[in-house]
Length: 109
Image 1 (tube, rainbow, N blue to C red):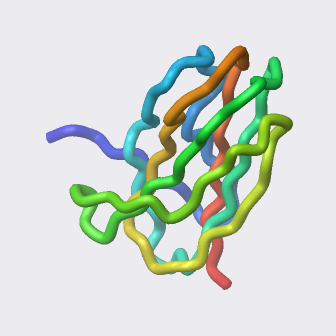
Image 2: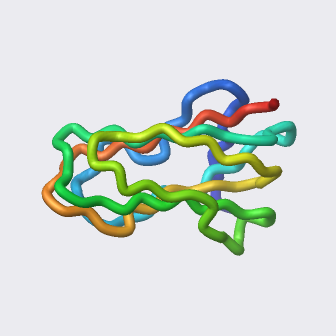
Image 3: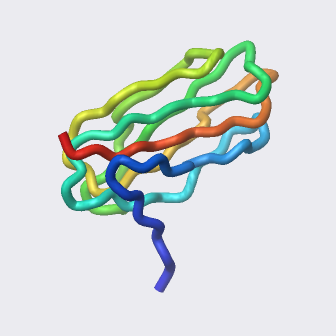
């Protein structure tokens, strides 16, 4: 059985932590039962000239759909509303950026 991390309500959880500027996915993270929305943030050590970051969510931990995205090259904060059970981040594409961090904060609104 593999371990799946659980993000806690109202606490920042790092999906991607200062990763290289390459297309990649984070691990899948379970959301707490009372989570009705979450905020997420992109941070760049070196701002890219172009970027596409996707947030994917699931109701079963297996089948994911895109629920949000960002192409802001200077960093971004967004909020997603929904009763999802799992979430992950994907750097779909990036040009010239480095040290990419994606943070997640589950909320019970």
